[in-house]
Image 1 (tube, rainbow, N blue to C red):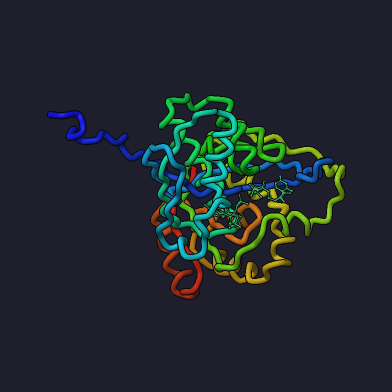
Image 2: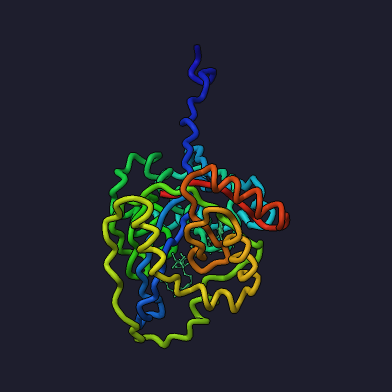
Length: 297
Ligand SMILES: C[C@](O)(CO)[C@H](O)COP(=O)(O)OP(=O)(O)OC[C@H]1O[C@@H](n2ccc(N)nc2=O)[C@H](O)[C@@H]1O
Ligand SMILES: Nc1ncnc2c1ncn2[C@@H]1O[C@H](COP(=O)(O)OP(=O)(O)OP(=O)(O)O)[C@@H](O)[C@H]1O
């Protein structure tokens, strides 16, 4: 057969999940001179998330589908493309291609949807270019894309410190969880600004996170920890009081709290069945909210 008639061999399409990030606790320890806040946060990842594929090729593009596609632009500001560009700056000749994002998570919701997408893009590019998962340039590109992207690149439960660059693995028991977002977007920068901390402010040290021997001890420790962003977020989005009440009214809710800078709140349950039951109750009473039963840990 002449060479021109040979079927063109395309690289196979690669797929990565982009799981939602949940801050089970979040302490703001101060504000650095560069304006970023110093944090200590127990972070877990959910079964629920977006899905990103990459058809490796020469030209970097992005298609959007899924329930979130209508509100999100596929333009150059999309965190998928920003992460790819950041990696390209560090790896000349990086092979990119056509990304397709199935956007299921609410946007600007405190569960790191965009960060999870950016991290999934970096994992896909690592696979397409034969880079080891621990390649420093992946981490550097992640941090340059956003503070939550390194944790999402790791994508396993951990203690996140600094502005998001210091990650310590943490074994967490498995929980059923319900994620609820009242469909009010909250900008992360607005919530941090509402804390009103001056650059250089220091509030205290982080409580050491113990090794958790099961769900009971984990819940007990987490109940004694705050999300310091919850009070300012509630001032910006008062509907959070309603979300909090709706979650507390579900049977077996063990811990009710806001994730990240909001406005997604979550409750923890002993298992998936309890979370699914709670989901039906909340969705029935609030059909306009985004309600997602899932697992964490
Ligand atoms: C609230 C969290 O979701 C907790 O996991 C993250 O700290 C936010 O991470 P993110 O959305 O990736 O944040 P970035 O995109 O890096 O920053 C968004 C805005 O939040 C502020 N920001 C973010 C992280 C941080 N530790 N201190 C901050 O003050 C930044 O000044 C910036 O104006
Ligand atoms: N792929 C993407 N998915 C979601 N948001 C994106 C994406 N690309 C860019 N953005 C923009 O990033 C901003 C933050 O979106 P995201 O959903 O990550 O917020 P978040 O859940 O509050 O994140 P975090 O918990 O990391 O603070 C929004 O203004 C959104 O328009």
